[in-house]
Image (cartoon, rainbow, N blue to C red; front, side, top):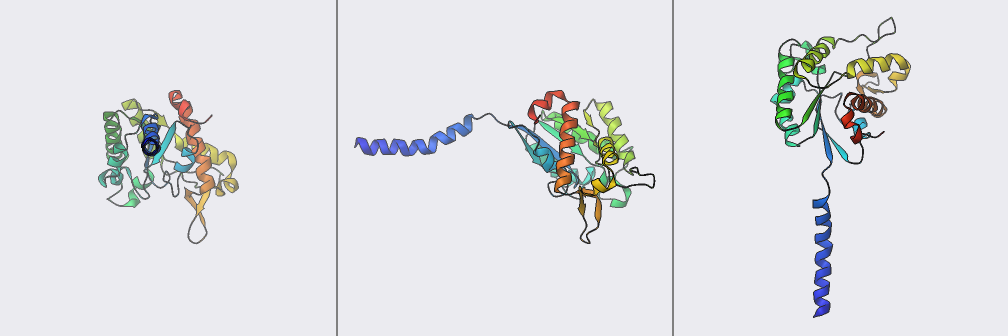
Length: 235
């Protein structure tokens, strides 16, 4: 009888003890990424950023290819970001907010782009999360002068002004990425770029190496911008 009782106790312990350990383990600090394909797991800097988190933190990349600040919200993707109960939400749009993306996605930098980003900021704060605006990763469009010529500036400037008006941290990835591109040069930067189906250089999206390099850049800029978050990032 005692042997059978002991066997049952041991069997229960095998099930219960791991569950108790999991229940009492401290919750990880959670970063959520909201954005377009230049942030996403498939062709953006999200995976590289996740690789630079400390052991106490995790990254949930909910960025979606082809979305703008407008369509990401209206299609319900933003709600998933809030439902994830993040500590910090990094928010980057702009590429698909441009006029050639059509009425379902395009926004005006001075009005609707600002309005949609304001919703993100207000709703993130309402659930106790820290919103951080990230300016658009620059496209790698080179001029004859050997410098990057960006057509995203109106959306970048709108994000900067909104961040100042609403007292939100702003990670200026647009400026930082241009500085990196011009420092390394076109040939080296091509090694970070995705390729089209025809094998041509994709000057918008990132390959695996590009995700690592830009993800590290984002982590570095974030640690400088908000020193309180540095503890959740690898040195």
